[in-house]
Length: 153
Image (cartoon, one colour):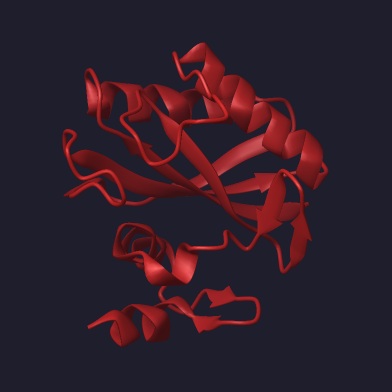
C-alpha cells in the first residue's frame, strides 16, 4: 500500500463542488482510499495572474496502484470533470487540476511524471494544505512541510 498526496485546484465554475466531486471520484477508483482532506482555501493565481482566484486543497490517499497507473486514474478524474489538457496550456484557468505531489518516498524525474512535484516546495497554496494533513510530512530530498512553509515567510 502506497501513501500518496494529491493537490487540488479549480478557478472556473462551482469550484468547491468540483473539488468535492474530485475527492469523491478519487475514492471510487479501485485500489484507492481517501484517508484525509485538508481545508480548502482561496488563493491568487500564479504565472498567469489575469484570471479568477483559485480554490486549493490537498488529499491524502492510500493506493495499491503503481505510480503510473495512479497518475492515469487522476488524469481520468480530471477529464471526467471537464479538464482538457493541451500542450500550450500552463497555469491558465481550469475547471479542475489534480497534481500528484508525493507518492510514498518515491523520487522520480521522467517525461510526464516528476515526484515529488517539482514546484511543491515553492508554493504556499500546496504547502499549507499539506501542513493541514501532516505538518511533519517529509518531502524526499527537501525536508519537512512545516519547515518548508516557514522558509516561505
